[in-house]
Image (cartoon, rainbow, N blue to C red; front, side):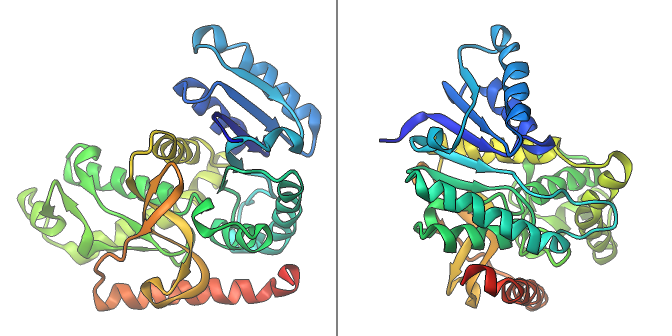
Length: 317
């Protein structure tokens, strides 16, 4: 039986431990189990986090094993090799696909009942791997997708247009990586089309500005990794947003990675697209209107995912 007040995190590196810290402060769960290939790492993180509980509220945080995730409502997977300076997310594909396969096989052994939230990179490929190995319904296997990229986009647009980030409605689609795209035709500021609002702010060179912002969103991770070695705060906040949406059954639209079965004209790949999330996982996939240029870009992103999946076909057999 699922315990809606329990969450599990597999992988206690920078990303996993920062997600644990973010979730601890929200009070959404009463129990959190941490699992890592190095048990001492999970134990140390659990101890460190637990020492902050007097200032965060009641919660049981402990290191455990796969048997402890059976009744967790959400299993967050961050384990895998980290992206290094000069590497793309797709460079991680084979080694992290093998790691993901091993993790999901252990998840299956204990007959875990909750949702799987994949955060490890390349997230779209690993979401597909997790789905195929687990055999779960696709609504139960969700990747963090371009939720972080979308936050980066909203932040940059808010600075450029001098407007509250909460008034910015825009989304990044496709691969969480080099082939991602911004759906500019869908973007608006509180209902005002993005280009019209830009004109109000005295900005008229829309194509050049949009291109620059898209590139900044796409290369943000490379810049952060180059400067500090890893990214973890932004993705922790993105995962926290996804988890909040699920636990509170908000029916919020977020661009998570989900397996496509005909949506946008694609099949057999996981791609980051706007989806409605609730307590049961992915409730619906939204096919937002895209212009010809955006459709071509999304098709190119899908092709990159298809080629990547083909390269690990032997792992999934």
